[in-house]
Amino acid sequence: MNDQEFKINLKLNTVAFIIATAGTLCFPQMLNLKENTLGFTNSIFSVFVWILCLYAVRWSLQTIDLKDRRGWSIAAVLSFLFTTAMLFGVRLDAVGNVDFKDPGLWIALPILTCLFAIFIRKFWNFLGGMEERKKDLAAHIRIPVTPAKAVRYRNVLTFFFLLVCWLPVFLAVYPGFFVYDAQDEWLQVASRTFNTHHPLVHVLLLGGIVCAVHKYTDSYNLGIACYTLVQMAVVSGGFTYLLSFMRKRKVSKAIRIVSLFYFAFFPVIVMFTLCSAKDTLFTVALLFLLLALLGMGSETEAFFASRARQLFFVLSAVAMMLFRKNGVYAFAVMLPVLLFCHRAHLKRLCVLLAAIFLSYFLINGGLAAALHAESGENQELLTVPIQQLARTYKFNREVFAPEDVAALHEVLPEEALALYNPKLSDPVKVRFQNEAFAADRLKYVRLWLRIGLKKPLSYINAWLVNSYGFWYPDTVIDVYSGNTVFTFTYADSSYFGYEVEEPGVRDSKIPWLDEAYRKLALEISQEKIPIYSMLYSPGGIFWCIAFVFAYVLYRRKYHLVVPYLMVLLIWLTVLLGPTYLPRYVLIFWFGMPLFAAMLSEEI
Image (cartoon, rainbow, N blue to C red; front, side):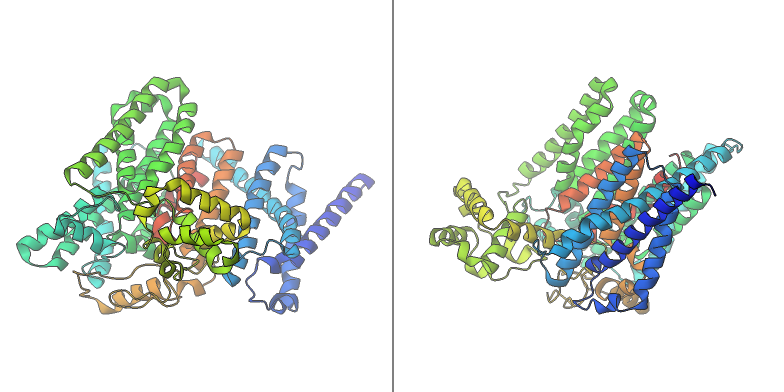
């Protein structure tokens, strides 16, 4: 070893030692040790962590291009956001509050950001090397063209295979999971009294099937079962189309086989396939939209030359927006991105986008007019401000002047404010006085601003604790803890609303399997299994998606950026929602095989 090599190794070893040591010292800042830091600091486990960090940092620095400013910039931003999420999340999970005056927080942030940025860059290098090897291998492999008849046969077989795999669970939880506003949607159809609180398309579909079957069979259970079977067929068709799309794009057979069995047996997929919530059909439509956006980006000329592809794009976008309002907001933000990316086809794209929004407003507005649906609710859009005012009123009531208290009670009565739940806005939100707010909106906006200027950190914490389950991987979803529903009281987990709301009733045909899904939904069971638990974590999967999004941006795979951006925009809209539940980000699970294929293949 010459002097130059010795100096380089000395520098790398010194830097690795400093970063690994500082990182190990800061790790307790992102671990939920319940104030018992001795569990890490006074443990030989911390020595093992330090040794692993030292080796990993040294190995990474030796093989990374340190002059790649663009790569380091993107990795640093991702690492900073991830580190911030972990440091904030552990505090919110432990005490429900981030102490922004805590010096340990601000010392750990830059150190851990640096550490994770190094690991991110190393992993990106590894992925880049895999891509190059696959390209070399693909150049020597010819993939035979499958006859159209064989393709149709495979698709039919896939479709029914999924249904057969889901059938035992359907029988176990018969007539299906009739939950998450299902009773309210059914009542609208049964009573012929409609409102726009829930998407009218789903209200009519769910309530219409249940009421129609009940009319001819006198059985509500059979009506719920029929709706569940219809939804099972729709979801199976969606997954079949996705797997067929992946095969056309030459995604490896191994990934497609794993994806098929994942769709068939992974509990989150099965539970929501059998769940009456609008989120399932919304997610299928969103999945179709992602495939349309992917085709638009990777095969632009073919897309704009094909009427079928353009129609698929329009229909999937309209369906997505009709099943959830946040789909409208997310897609609206996507408009300038789409127009910029496809400015060479600006006229055609403008026609398609106009058709999408015109169809949405005509269908949604037409149904509201035809059904005389009542509107005027504001609390869904005001979830975050309502929680901010309620939290500040509970913990910092002294900042409210007498006139502020009087104004606040006009829209949020004292009994509503007393029910403040940091993780769930529903107890306060449902008692919001819409008439008072509509009479003088500016008055209450000023009240919100005035209190916020006095207690900005209270407002920030109110929003963070209401949404941190979407971005903190270690969250245990227990937002309904203590709430009593039709057949049980939520305890340590609210992962899934395992329930059959009235007028249905659970009539299990396979009790032991029914009990297994009850434990998955309502008990902390999967959370106790290391690594596997992250497959159920909205926050954990989000950071995987964010990692891949940053990677494709780094690799300049811009045709993949737009579909990922659509998913991230949907995620941003749910941060403004009433709580954090897996159903709001169901695309994380439904789209997981597609995300894996986009990462590992040239799709």
